[in-house]
Image (cartoon, helix red, strand yellow):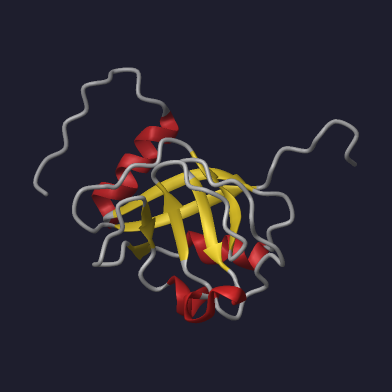
Length: 147
């Protein structure tokens, strides 16, 4: 890439930062919110840049090296949550050799007991090419009455 043109004069500082990360490092950062109870080691693993698998799936972005990185991490114990577009998911042990595979849904998908939702990102779209992706999920906001 030789040039980047931005047509929005009111781009936020966060957006400028994300654009800079892409131009400088070639990494697309996807920000979102973690589901309650996701282990910090899993959140840290998501932030490590990865890229989409070469055998792209129509309904999701599957991270190429996630199986190796997540297979031995403390994954959620249960799956079966709804998977609306933008869900960051992981295959559980019951998925066999797919255990640890992380995906970002591009459209609503039905619940699957072999898949747990780790969090959500806003506006998930497949970036052109196969750039590296980093998923950064913030801790969920406390609910009223939580301490």
